[in-house]
Image (tube, rainbow, N blue to C red; front, side):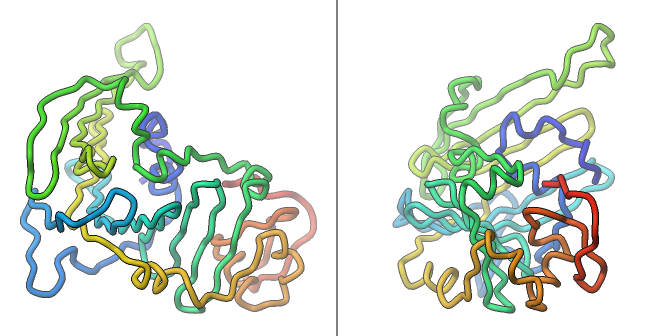
Length: 273
């Protein structure tokens, strides 16, 4: 799917949404159902002991048109002031309330930490509220409120919203974008979210929600050999760093041009983000 499919998805989602649409994603082929549990269409498996600041949420995401849609799996792990996004087996990422960011590479047990100043230097901007809730709770006041209903473990509040992505005098110059949201008030998290623009649709559906404790969180984030992004430039002789830069997982602060074997090339700067 092209980057332009949901140009204005950032109206509703933070960098999470635009990254999903704008960068290659290795789809997680594992089923959302585990063990003997079976996820029925529209059915949420949840544990009522789940707390608002400590949970693991599994989402099924579909993006595309009715004829051609891509499916992805997203696991969100919220633990106090950290939220972890897992989309595939190669790497996953964590945002912290203070605006810092960490990318983990589980196979190599390596991680790269980015301070807020590093992200600003790379021209990467994000709304932390959107990162922690997929949609900023403050945005709900702009949406039309619908029915409230109790489903499985939690209360869901429905919302809708319509907007023009850009204005034009001719009818075909402006594309209408609509949003349909079921919001779990107790957790400040979507149970489902559908954004439609023309024939294109982006859909998030929560399939499983469970509590997570300190031990479970440590399994995700501890035992990694961490490197500050500021030190990446001094670590290019490290085969892991060179490989990750070449594959686009790590961006370089000064020069972003590398050959296939990870050697830095002269001239130019990389402005992609």
